Length: 441
Image (cartoon, rainbow, N blue to C red):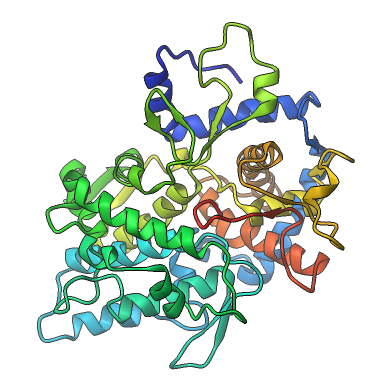
């Protein structure tokens, strides 16, 4: 894959925040893998067929031949874990004495979905959430989804007692780690990984909402993204609105930039968020390579947010997003774990030093900045494209008939979880453990 020519560090920083940059930079890492030039992983492309077949079996088990019924990847399913919650909430709003119009319904859903995604970084295998009214227990992403839904219902994120079902800067500014811990049932016997990082994201979100009125309006709500996007939309002959995915992506990348930890990579004075140096790229860089040439963007939470917001906007308002082919697979531990557990990727023997293996465990535990994690995530982005193509080939479908978002929802993410449970039934955890700070995974 060819290198994109860039000038100043500021130009490179701007480029690294775009959607196309994710595939381009991850593609460069993948090219190294094809040449056996990664530092931590060996790549086994002959295993892709088997990985795709594993995913196809899951798709057929859950959907039969009704591939059109597969929903896109998004937060909606986690919010509805165990039973429908989102649609009944919409129906309650519609039945209220002063029902909101469709645009306000969508604003509220954007509020809910965005804050729920930001709380969705890995919670660890020891934490769970018990829903009060049903008594059902949920863990991991579903637990975080159900917990955040309950918090939203109770007005946890709202600074306006007369409008509890919203997220705004004032409400977020009042949130503390003890309040989040209480709302999410965290205790010594029910520990959550990344609690402080999660709380910091919410506090920083408050500041971002106030600072970016272009996207979030004077009322400083995520839901006001709807109004920003409407101004950028094009109406067709039938009055239907079309919005390019770049408009939503740019609003999220720019509007949410202040929420990421100050310790993240910066270039040209610009904090980049989920962008990391790749040692393998640096080792094979040309002598004339510009500053930032070794940086690889992932923007996982931004991608997860984008997927999650597209669905309610399209469903409730009937808008159509264009350019979804630019969206990538999400480089997180379920998708990446599928690749390792099914042999597409293998850690090189001895590549990870012994101190990174907790006592009595054959699973390495690494910080998000570790170069092995950067290689793993970059390979995951490109391999999701390749496995999606192989899944379509095995099913005889086109990209229009089975989108990447549907593959993520019905196959790879779910497949990563299921193979992890088969291989590590005690925890169901990934083959490589990441020290979550509440902002990456």
